[in-house]
Amino acid sequence: MLFALCIIQLFVQVVHATCPTFAAWLHPVPGVEFNNLQGFATVDVSPDGTFVIVQLQITALNFSSAIPTFNEVRIMGPAASHVTVPVGTDPLLVLSRPMITCDGMSQWSTTLRRSGAGIPQLIQYMRQGLAYVSVPTERVPDGELRGQLHVPHCLEAALTPPDTSSSAYGFANVMINADQTDVAALVQLPEDAKRKLSSAVDDLRVVGGTGQTIMTLRAAQEFSEICIGNEPHKYPPEYNLESAEAKAFKLARLAPAAVQALLAHPTVSLSTVSSGPGAEIHGVLVPAVSCRDLLTKHDNLYTLARAHRSDWITVWSMNLGNPDVRPTLQPRYYAHPLQVLKGETAMAIQRRFGMTVDELMMINPGLEDASALPVGSTLCVVPNWQTTVAGNGQRICVD
Image 1 (cartoon, rainbow, N blue to C red):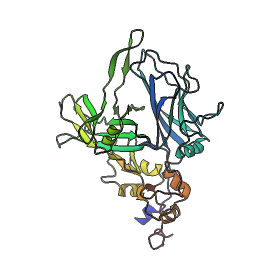
Image 2: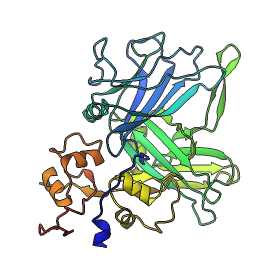
Image 3: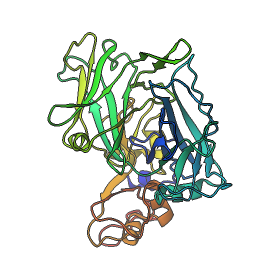
Image 4: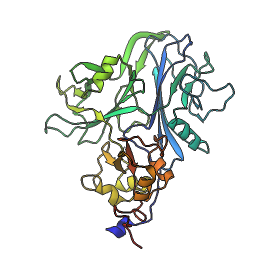
């Protein structure tokens, strides 16, 4: 067993985190006269820190009578919240040009992979809260929408049937911004015959701990309000099949009482046409568990291990079940969660688990400063079995 653990680590590049590392809610810039757009962006960092995966969503609200032409969305910095970089500053990252037209959908979303020499600087600015997403339009070229990238508070729930009558499944995330004013919900559903829903989604909602509905996620919807000419506003469903390349997020701005209800044992409930008013699948939202990825149909424990410089035996030891069985949208540990104790230092953690500071920062992309670890926070740790030491200071793997 030790020989199997003390192997040279391989490496591939995938990112399917259960929760995004960084997120930004995009609102009209103060002073801008237009208020008919909103958006959301997430940024996940690759395991080796060489590229990022950006999900971007822009929505024309249903009272919009005109939709502007968009320029390319950019990530800018360094600048704190409500501070704008000087005119002429090059973007940290150029994303894509949103395409919203009244004869199509009034919501646009995309998933982008971006790499380049500037990625390490971008990651550092995001860790420090000094990067923001800017959405310029032809009517506001300097940016009509803006949102500061930061580590969101994230909740998650595995959605399962209330009894054993079916194997239907889903996975939900709810993210809350740092000010506790904005939320974003993401619901994903598998498509395999065994775990898919019995029929079309009828009702999907997030319910607070006291029973009040906090958010309702719609199926595909067409509004009576006219976008322009005779074209009505049309929006895609606010839930996602696992094969969707670009995810749809439900966005909402909540009152403080609703946010507190969201933090007090909320649930996600999904009913279908055939299930009637009762939920076909539901789950309790809890704080997202660190150090886990969601498997896609292209993943298994081997690819998960290689992506994070580990080995499949180590990954298997952290996860229940047969290593050859790989149900999609099931969270799987890729690293050991380690809670930081009082007096514990990054240097001691690095020495014990055979990691460098760069490796520790790489596996924890949202960590701002390895030398100042908050007590009670959770670090992801991937031991280097060739240099890991036991509690008595002796190496585990001996040449």
